[in-house]
Length: 384
Ligand code: LLP
Image 1 (cartoon, rainbow, N blue to C red):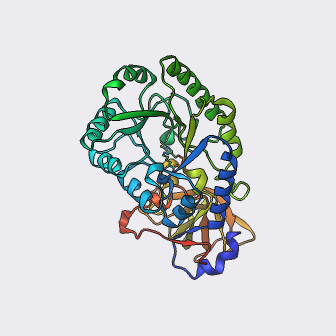
Image 2: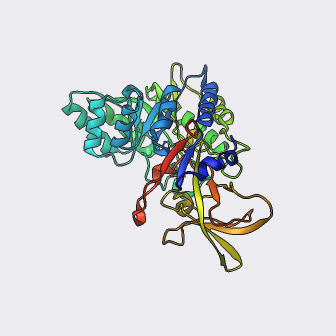
Image 3: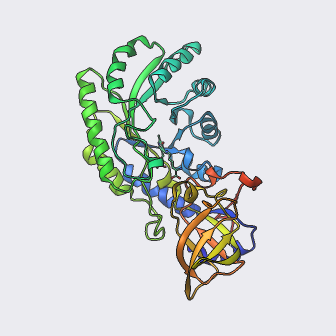
């Protein structure tokens, strides 16, 4: 559905707000399911991308599991209908309280990120007379070729254990009575658009699996994390992420062992394109060789441009015709509160409705109350 056709509905609402196209989400989920059908693949949705309860309903219905990075996310997932036996819990810094709660809830697996965490998990599982299933997060040292802040599988990053640590750990595992080693976990980074990076990861995993097999380990699961990127430049050209090419990399290059399952933790590629941030132009004013458009939405509603210099496609839904060059900025007292520099938009005026596209992932969920702003509300395609 073209957003422009919703202009009169948007105009009657208080801005800024998130608008979610639930039909597009359904189509995305259907496409995702189609691409994993008949393969030993299972997708856990990465809740960190968006925890909106309406979106979660569709995601649960599609049969995805949940990938969580905090105790609150684990609880939120289960409260919203994910089966606890389909929840994985990752994160470099899980607190004792979070681990205890997740153990009580009987989650599927902990993605363990350090030797020390493994020791703590064993102790805490013992206190509850449980055996905790865990996958070891390995830092594969594969370059994801994305923004440095969202690169995770490089040897300089804080995530996971090194391959050398893995070999050392194997000798100690038998002393951990309350743990069950069920898999390897990886995640090279986010917004990865070069599919070759996933191929490198698959090849790296094959090397590791070969050595593990020689040492007598045949683990039931491999988890390759998430990271599939989306088209921020032309969201309407590619409203659904390229699941075909993504899954094909693993299908072709990752040699699963007999009965081994491949797990994925996709976030952005599932929810990004269905969300837009809808805002109103408060003012326009001349700048040095350009014109500023000052929106009523800012980095408090969508922090990605300020934090990563991310570019989201911006549309003026109210105007058409001759274009001018603008800097689109928010109202917050920070110069980084800028959505775009020097973009071409139809001549814009106070009151125009602006859509900032591809904001369904890491948008609403990263909103803040800085400057004591209200958190943004959400509207859905089935209600307006
Ligand atoms: N698994 C792990 C271990 C992760 O760290 C992440 C994302 C995912 C899965 C999901 O990745 P996705 O499929 O969404 O790329 N706030 C940033 C993105 C941070 C991603 C953090 N980890 C942004 O707005 O671009």
